[in-house]
Image 1 (cartoon, rainbow, N blue to C red):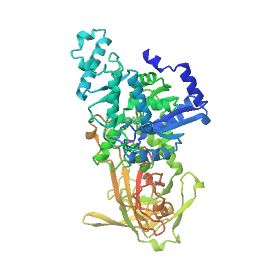
Image 2: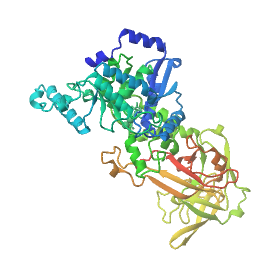
Image 3: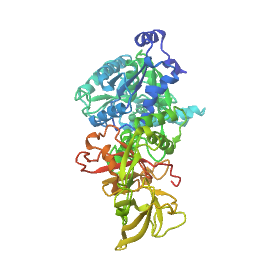
Image 4: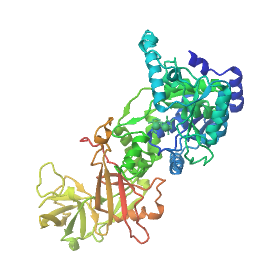
Length: 581
Ligand code: ATP
Ligand code: MG
Ligand code: MG
């Protein structure tokens, strides 16, 4: 009840807010620059830039979203993260009304802290971390007793008033102002003092136990520079910045629900405008983790190559994997906003990708693990030049065509050849005839050449006579002038759909399979070029027949003019859902 009272804006505060905002409805997206954005943030952006307005029936011309760097902890924040956040947001296509930094309000926040001290609603505290923990612990025990209808003085008596309610609560305003000033001037050591809000140790909500508003930290700030050695806490900063920016709806994830009460307590204490707060559930996705703390660990311990490793659930990792803004945003639209915690199936994301990529990516042929085939009757073929037209998109003739030439030496993928044939195997085997894509006729395997027990080459002949065997399938192949290519195929980062607290044991050791000697048909030179590659943008997508949807990786050095250099492709997703896994 008390919380509701704090949440209510007095009519004059509301009127002033309305006067400033007019018909504008404003939200904000406030990431902390302590890591890269992940797909959970994509959901939050989708909510704050779009979905929330739709739900509230705000017409497009009145929608405004502020992009705010919530940068109050210089220990974890870096300029690299600041840059990456902005680029990922832009890549996803969101256009903020403006960009702000919580740290730009450090001066105002300090003035508000002084105001609270003067109102006897804040005090400087010299309790150690351990003492504060003991204080919190005891207050919680007493709250539990109260909740069960028991007497807290019996169940969890206060034995040391220095701990609870604490020895600093009744320090005079003058003394507090002096100490706060000295904190700011850098006269104390880190951890020696904090500024705390004089809230309520009898509350059932531990977030009301005299939150720390300021702590001493001699770390320079990546945005604010060297001017400060005291930094405001998240709880103290967040609501005030929302209010100063005239945010109408402050949307956060459910774990912040218990922080509504201090949010409103602070704004009420300062007579500031109080935005409406909404919580939605966090996005959890199968077979991965969505927490910057854990993602940092994956990067730091070398489980992945970096924040943009294609296995990472980060926006930059997903981009490198071949996911596009269209895919990510339509996925976020689909999952919508709920208040129930759940884990979204990864195949939902993959299916969204297939649908989008099938329509937009250009077709090519490749052999991941090539096996050489010499066509012995190549010169006897009447089909003069053996050049075939291939539709760039299997479904859309408007997307144009490219050509592919059947050469005297071709390569198949090694999974398309077996020494031992069997009924359910459609690929090539000794003395077996199989169709070749685009050529239309058959390839018959006549000879297998082995060296040291390894198959090094096949010899075969072409057969397009009218009475040839009708093949069960037509294999994809690549010609002899194909480009060498490295193809990276990915699997889940974790072996279990919901990584537990022992998540480090659940990391999948086989999350990446590299085909370093792959070959790709030369038509891709029309679409792959080193000068077009940009790690902050979406790169060229291909659908490799049989193998799936792929994207050009920024490690690619291939120059389409000289036709020299290295092509690296990442598999975004297989062509069809893999029932086996
Ligand atoms: P993390 O634990 O990954 O650091 P966070 O909540 O601390 O996440 P912030 O950068 O502070 O991350 O969050 C910016 C915004 O994105 C917040 O409003 C937060 O609620 C939202 N957000 C973060 N993770 C998710 C998620 N998994 N699902 C939905 N929203 C999220
Ligand atoms: Mg955070
Ligand atoms: Mg966090």
